Length: 271
Image (cartoon, rainbow, N blue to C red; front, top):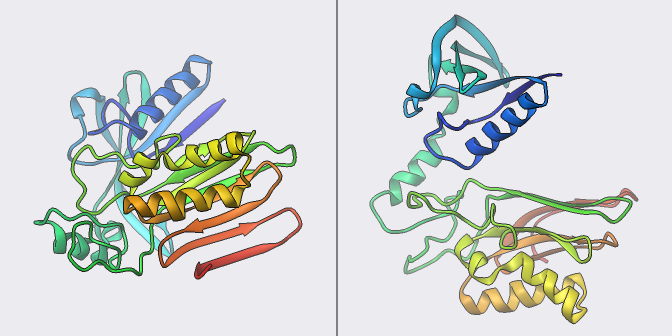
C-alpha cells in the first residue's frame, strides 16, 4: 500500500516529541509491514537538520491551494532514518500569522500569567478575572450501535505557558477517558485542575462504584469537586446507552450533539 502522512512534525527532526514521536513510530511500523510510506512536513528553522540525509530542493516555484487562494512555496526532499520525507517551505508566512493571537501573547509575555486561547479568558493569577470564559479545546465523544465508546481531545494549550507544560488533554483519565462499562469523556478548561482532580476517570468511577447516572457523576465532579479546588471548565460525555451530558461550571461552553435519531443540539451559553 502507498501511504502519505501529512503531519506538523516528525521525530527525530522535531524540536519536541509528542506528536512527532507518534508520526515517526507509526510510519516506521507501516513501513516494516511492507507499505511504501512518505511523510509531508513543514520546513522550519529549529528542525534537527543533521537527522535528514540528502536534503535537497525538488521544487522551487510551486503554488499550493490554500482556502480561497494559493501559497507560494518550495519543496525539499530528504530521508529521516529511512523514511521518505517532503518538507514544505512557504516563501511567505503571511498565511500562517494570526494578529489577534500574537497581540494576546504580547500582552502577557512578560508576566507570570497564563491564559487560554480566547482573549476574554481568565488570566490565572490576575486580580480581577473575567467570568465570561470560553475554552478553546476541540473534543469529541461517541457511542456506536453496539455501545462501544470513544473519546478524543485536542487543544492549543495555554497562552504564555512555560516550556514543557503538559495539560490534561493528552493525559488519559484527566482530560480524556473512555470505558465501555461507563462513559466517554472529553474535557476543556484549566488543565492543571483537571489533572489534580483526575476528572474524566473520576466520573467513570462514580458511575461504576456508586451507580450514579452520567449526569449525576458529571455534576459531582465538575460543579462540586472542581469548584472547591478553584478549577473552571467543562466536559462533554456519553454513556453506553447513548445518553449524553454537557457539564460546565463556567459562563459558557461551545458544544453540540447529534444522535442516530436525527436529534441535534447546538449551544454556546446557558444550561
